[in-house]
Length: 407
Image (cartoon, rainbow, N blue to C red):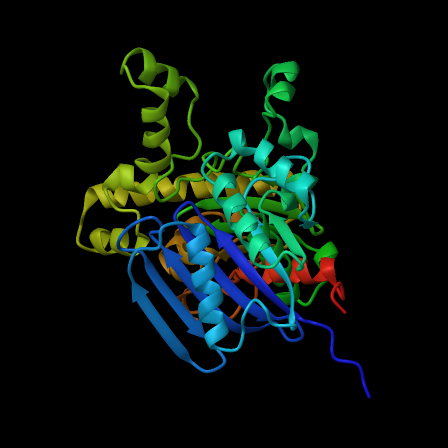
């Protein structure tokens, strides 16, 4: 009698402050078996959408879900309806997205009490994210205490940055005392897209230098040299860098002092201003690039200025990362805006022909869910659109770590 096959399914959980996103994947072929989203947790109008990919069944509900524990129990119940429950012997592990791992976590890590304590210790540098991640982890551990649970950190991919890129030019003792340095975020996306771009070019990741532009409501850039991140735009927090949907990105820090001294604003008010009321929404009242482009087409000057500021910052980072890498093989656009906004891609590389960057108008206009080149065959640097897959990356890292743990 042949032995039962080793468990090969991974449940990926992304616990936000008021939401839980999840996907269940079979790692033998990367097939998605189920996915869903619980949002507005803690409200009377909580919403839950679950999709069983294997059957095509979609179930939606609205009603109060008081906390993350209730949300994850509801997820487990929905999965059980499709014979995909958390009690399945085919489940190998649960992979958790954790936003901030500091300098401690440079790779996916099996979660134990010491790991939980360190994630908690990092809350001061990720007050909006790590607490919610912890709630999701602890709830999942209570539901399946026998199952390996793995933390995959947004910051881990960027821990290869040299100190010259990671350090801020402030007093070293102060920086070390308060763990002030550039950590970077969206690491699972940058890791996945940089590798996928190399594959698109038919080359090994260690033979390719890639600039990855993760452009969504949150946005970040990275310079990836031979498979390793050497620079990224986000810093101590996800506020630094590119112009984003609601975040300012790069800012003279003296603006904060000015707002406190002259504007009489509190630190909480300034935090809200820079994280939630700035970026595109602060510039023109919209943070949806589709709406901004529609307004531009109608002659809206405020929307056009917001777009120009967004593109100006993006070009600065492309140029800077060309200088950091020295030789660039590809620039890859990803995430919601990067994958879908052809006008952003065209504008971002316009005028950068001396750096070897240009797009083919016809190729750029094509809409597809597949990785593709949008640069002309004669282009010195490949320009690509590479859909990101952070859930698959988390599942892949989780499964690679636990292997046949349950065999």
